[in-house]
Amino acid sequence: MAAEPVSEEIASSLARFFSVQGSPSHREISEIFERAELDAFDPAEGAQNIGKERRVRAVLETSQHPSERSRQCVLQLLASLRSAGSFESSSSSYAGAESVGSAKRAFKNAGWALDDDGRLGPLVLAEIETAERRPAIELQIDRMRNGSSDAALLIGTAKELLESTARYVLEELGQEIRDNIDFDSLLYLARDRLDIHPARYKDPSEKTLQQIFQSLWSVAETVNQLRREAGTGHGGTDPSTIPSYAARSVVQAAGVMAQLMITRLDIVMGRRSS
Image (cartoon, rainbow, N blue to C red; front, side, top):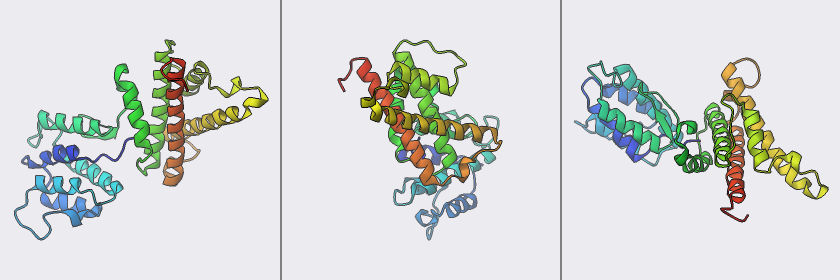
């Protein structure tokens, strides 16, 4: 999944919103820093005449604090900007198209999508152009190794990664895909075309390979089941109740499966030998 939504580029672009008249007050900013336990990095502490833009940029650029706190801080800052009307073109507090566009680009570079209303979510791989999809998938796999501790977010991103990787593989192999194909069928088709479906390995000498591929498919099934239950809200396991270490393990395993499909594709396409 995406890494935490904090970088120097994000810090700079988001801070600019607070230079606009009508943006959240110093007091609101202080409360956000305190809730995220980042107030110790606020340059306004013990100083005077420090602007809001400088305060926000300084705290977000600080690399000494845990990234989970940074994410909480960014989300709360965005919520305060939405309340102030910073993303509404009809509002007197509107930050301007240039600032909004700059923030969108900054978050996109970090693997996140900021919409026109100022709401943040993981960058949807399916929306990326085909030519750019492989590097985006590989970047997502890498980021998922050190992702958020939010279980529901982790599970959702893992499912998206597996779906996008399977679609990319099938497109590369020239396989037509039905518009309404479901998750199980999509993954089955990709594994079958890549010759990594466990059902293909029936010889006793191939038992270990069969077990490896079956274990990875079990992880994919678990990811899909958890994501489906989170979406419906009816029964089953609520991802928010899953310990972050367990969710992270499932997601990392999904990343292994996605990497397997990419590697196997290169072998099938003759881009590598093994």
